[in-house]
Figure 1 (tube, each protein chain N blue to C red):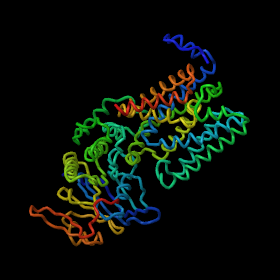
Figure 2 (cartoon, each protein chain N blue to C red):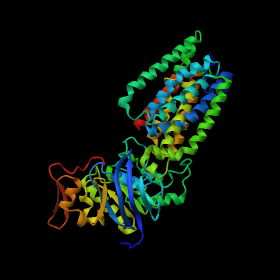
Figure 3 (tube, rainbow over the protein chains, first blue to last red):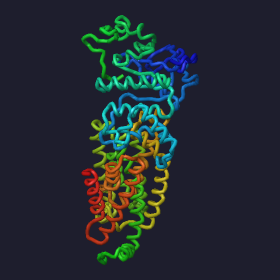
Figure 4 (cartoon, rainbow over the protein chains, first blue to last red):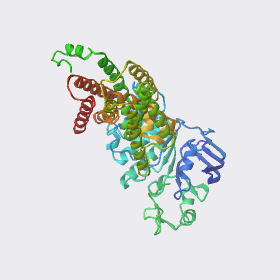
Length: 268
Length: 277
């Protein structure tokens, strides 16, 4: 892991409000370059708000937030974003490669007519990186959820992102695709030193990869090593509902909600 | 009505352009087709067909008001359609969201708009012809002034569309990612609705209020069935729209078939073929 002394993301005494209601307050949090971070917490606790603050879409009510050492700014090329699960309409007639391309120059004025070679090459490069060459030229609406997700990750990366903010990227994927997408994200994180903040309801698929866990619950944001946070006691306290952490025979941790499941597919 | 066409296309073209009203219809039709084809691509991409329909019905009393006030009907159309677009857009949500709660209200407003148009037209003594023309289209009514207004409107709207085209595509297919990348998604939605209003206003002259889909939605829908490439689709939508208008006007000129029927049938036939492919 890259040992960068400067945090790439830093909240200091930060408070967020939505419609006059405090979402979380007095948050101090630092994320280092190349870390793989899970953002966990119950529905409505403010995980998406946290992501949107980093994107500059929601201003902090109080406190400071710096991204790559600078005040937060919307539309930065260094921050890639995958919004909470969008399923593309089966009738959406636009190719995957066009969707990726929009991440590069979709915000520029003008028409998408002349295809600059350097840009096309960059688009092809990220499509290769996520392993989507085989279907990138098919209409996005015809692709499976996992294929769409790979292309959306390519879109988030294409402008040169050094940090990925992924809001529930594993939701509504089947188990195989959850594994495959998790490994892809980990590979991008490790091999390209891209910092990853991943919002999840179900922590199990990414548990083995995590460097750090950020917990958003009850108006607070706390962070720690996975071994410290992913315990029966801590999770039960944070969720306010019984949660059990088990260890499988090969030593992996598994998080299980009791009776009332921790809700894996709700909206955050 | 006129001489019959032959297989000599040059002679046919001369016949077509013989009368001033037909020159006006072809000129206005060409401008309308260029604008409607380009706008239509985005309407289909955004799934905003219903907004186009709404605006066209709101335009009907506008046309009548334009005639009553001795202005050009297209000016009345533009005034009513743009006002409606701003009203819809500034209310926050697009028409296509929140269907269930609002469909009844919108339905009522649309019926009322048609009724007001009917009133205006009856105030303008004995003009069943005019009502018919603005409901179903006509090749007779386009004046020199209409052509001028159409030309200015189309030039302005196409220029605007060329400027906002790419971010509009981004905002249409992936609004949340677009917003995060710095695209002004809400402002674009409003601007686009105004462009739809302008396209509807000029298209009503040729195909009428009730058949405006034929130019505003069908070419874009057919183009998107034929290619998933945005640049190509946009161009194809415009070319199809031009073909429909030119052939429709020619058919209407040489035969007793109404122009609205001719354009709509060509457009629909093409769409069915594109889907069946």
